[in-house]
Every structure is written in structure tokens, then in C-alpha cells.
Length: 148
Ligand code: DQA
Image (cartoon, rainbow, N blue to C red; front, side):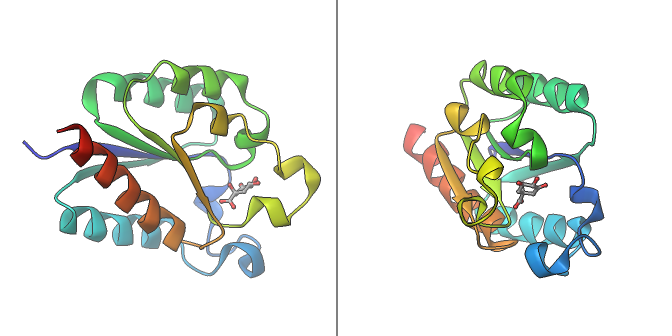
């Protein structure tokens, strides 16, 4: 059975395409999902992709990943910098978690330099636009393979 991974997207990422394109690029979240799906298939992975603006919905999706998925990528948007609830949900998982950001958060405002997600992540990829998701897929695929 192919490994199944979950890609979780947080608040305002549904607005990609029109949201500050000079920072986040012109691709929509649907464009990124399509790219990820294609790349995941090349890696032999099944992929689920979700987005929510609601913190609790993100927590519930992360909790469910414990039984349905073998790896998780997360771009928690602004919750990266604020959400202990999302960090705690991620800390419960025994599957590899990779933190993803389109922008280089370390090049931006100081409040974006702190990440609660990093405390629960195996690795972090930021600054490559949608390419961050693709690199993270490569990373999670390698981690899953090394465990097999
Ligand atoms: C982001 C960076 C966050 O600081 C911001 O709040 C986002 C997007 C990124 O992908 O670059 O919503 O996670």
C-alpha cells in the first residue's frame, strides 16, 4: 500500500493568487495542490490536501492524521507564530512533520521569526514559493522510505 501524506494549510492561504503576490506569488492554492499531487504521485505517495481558516479545524485534521497518514506537511500561516494548540496536536503525532512556508519568514518582520510549529517539526522549508511544498514532499518521502 502506498504511504499517504496530509498537507495542511492554515488561514488566508485560500486567498493565494490575489494575496500580496509580491510576497506569496501568483499561484492559487488550487495550483499548488495540483503541483503537489503530481509530485506526490511521482514519489509513489497518496496525498490529501486541506485548508482552513479555523484553528480548531486544523487541530482536528492533525489529530486524525495519526491514524490515516504516514507523514504531514503543514503551512500554518499566521498560526505558526501564535498557536500552542496546533503545536500540541503536532507533538502528539508519531509520523514525520515538515513545516513549510512560501516566504522566507526569517527575512521578514521579527514576529514571524518565532515558530511554535518548529518545536514539533522534523524540518523546516521556507522561501522557495510553491517550491517549498515540493522540497518538503521530497523530504517527507525520504523520511518515510528510511523507516520502511
Ligand atoms: C506564511 C508565512 C506566515 O508568516 C504568514 O502569516 C502566512 C504565510 C508563508 O507561507 O510564507 O500566512 O506561512
